[in-house]
Amino acid sequence: MFSFTKKQKGNRLTALAQSPAGTVCATIVKTGTDKPRLELCGFYPANPGQSATGHLQQLARQLKLSGNSVTTLLPIGNYQLMMVEAPEVPPAELKAAVRWRIRDLIDFHIDDAVLDVFDAPPSGARGVQESLYVVVSRTSTVKSLIEPFEAAGIELGIIDIPELAMRNIAARLEADKDGIALIFFGADHALVTLTRNSTLYLARSMDFGYRQLQESPELVDRLALELQRSMDYYDRHFQQAPISTVALCPLPVELSDLASRLGEQTGLPVQTIDIADIVEIGGDVETDQLGECVLAIGAALRTEATQL
Image 1 (spheres, rainbow, N blue to C red):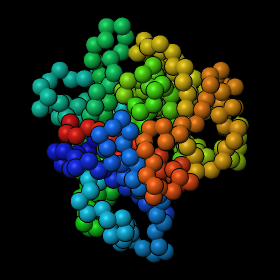
Image 2: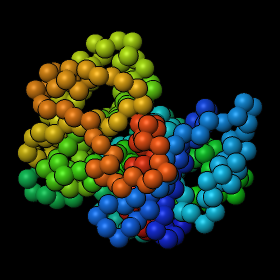
Image 3: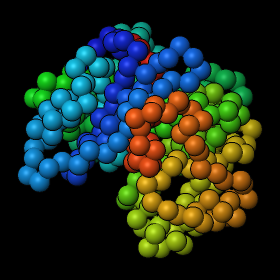
Image 4: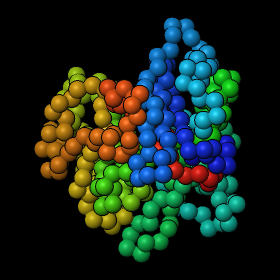
């Protein structure tokens, strides 16, 4: 998404996703085979009172990140993802035209916005490219994300979004060829993506996560309803065959009946994906932390090499 370098350096990409509690890190190495290797994965808590910059400096030394290509993720809630009609302008004028088009669709002044675009899949039977996805955030939000990395001497190549990190994971699953609904749970939010052939068709976020599901298991009914609405829209708007595969990203906590209850509500088989199906797990990776690292792994699986 928001790009700062022309291309990824080398065959190694590290994703660092920060939170007030610490940083999730994942490093993917392209091996020349069908499966890239997950070389590093873990959550690294910040020391009490430690600044974001100080924590990143410590990680850069500890994990020997010097020379790595590095990406990070905008947290959900810090940006908007919207689909707009594609302007009929030359490529060099595209972002300016989109900026004009979305000025009344955001709740802050367009001069304070930073945005990027990527293709939305064609809708209807004609298969004509009519729309674009637009990611837009406040300039101050993006700047505050970048500043600790710069101060720590870590060169960011890309700032990505969770929806595309999930797209990267789904793209490595066999079911993505025919369409797959993938569900990710953070502590206090959930994200559903519908993808097919490595293309993001639809994404929906919800204001509850695995903590709320632990306390109120009946929230699975809301999840099932939102999932069904998303799949119905996918069928109608994009005129695709119905999605028949629903998958859950690994969780850092045990929710043993989530898949079965969601399957009962939707009438579809639901299973949790195994990260080992999409990447080779390096010998130094602590597998019990994979649930914490899902989005970072997805971000590090990024394959786009050039700016939009």
